[in-house]
Length: 614
Image (tube, rainbow, N blue to C red):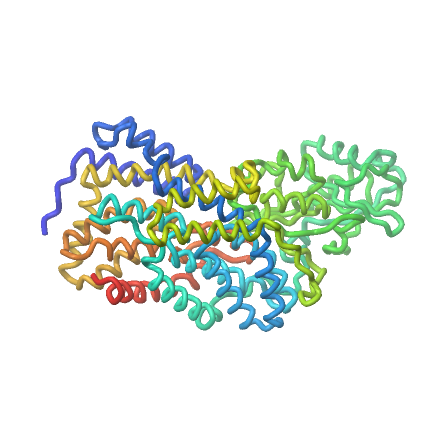
């Protein structure tokens, strides 16, 4: 089978693809920024890419893009009813603290919810609930958080509206195949099989592969390895700090070019106060909790006449004070904190909150934190106040993990009352699903109609609706869709398909379908399922055409591969959200996720052949 010749247009398009892939993987730029750059390049290079400026901008008006936007708003309306929190509370009451039962309830509930509500807010709501359940049961939260994310990914393949990549695949099916959009429940039979097999794996083999990275009763200062960064000192009578306010003391320290240190707590006569919340005047004999390196502490002690307690270990109790608490929180993908430096963020400037340490991609950041820019998925150890913690969670900037040492009795905990708009919000979502499922309206029109109903009935305010949208995902979609057009127009998709078709000489078509699933899943694990779907669906359909197979079967392989990006924490945002809270290492996702990906390659391939035909 001869390969088509490589043209200049192909070479340019492949160059853009590889540049985009490199930027996606390296994270030198945010994915949405990369996508917009690709869009501009496609239009500028129109003679070679064969994508006009109008076509380059068509992604913003794509039915998939608009449907994803609408589903974010509909999901927010349902989430604000309080129904998801009630599900979590129900889990706490029925599991009784038994690990296997708790794991089964968590993955089942999450998987089913993710089929109808965007899985990112579902995971954001369940992270603190699952963390609390784990602590009450005396088990490591690491044992539950990775399965939570994997279940959300599996559940996203139950219905067409489960994930953004499903909707993109539906749009491409219309464009590339002689058929209409994919039906709401057209691939649900296979989705159910995948979810059941995935849950069975997580409850058996996966249960023994998921590591216990965070011990159930670990002191937070130990969990973040702060022992060598926290010290207790007392103020001598002749110290220059005597008579200064706490704020002035910190300003004095900040003025030293060779000292980096933060005053965290001041204690006098057994009464401790968080430094960020007080302007108390320092007196001789006051005990100060300082965060710094040992070198900087020695300079501070010598320069400002302090006395150090060299054998004193500072624990999390020593960091608490009147009206203070020590909490962990995850930076959500759509948070306004993403991209801001800690020193310039609202945490430091307005909320009397100190970031003590950051867990990022399996590592710990404890020095020079003020200059660090926050990323989605960062887990922060915060010294804060209850009011500040509530504000941050209410604004959807952070998912707050439960405060330690304050166990919750789920049998006695009363849920917040449901919103009076609950019937309207749930009814609207059900109505959208039914209208689309019965082909009474295109899904994009049904979803936008649902948005109108939620706004008109005050289920959501206009501001809440705009805030609910993951605009980075919308711009990623709009920017990357024209790249798929360029691959088709220039023949690049056909060239890659020819390489896949060469494999068919040595293996049967069914095995080739499995290869497409595996390759697509591995690509998704590196560059997100959305980008993978745009790039791989044209290739898969062309491959099917060249080997005389059903294009829809190969499209379904790519669609399901988009929910199988288990092998890395960076491919899917729910993996990123549990990465820090679970204390995982990068290789933990490979160890647990790769066997599941291989298992699903067999299940999905056989399932497509039996249910839809190849």
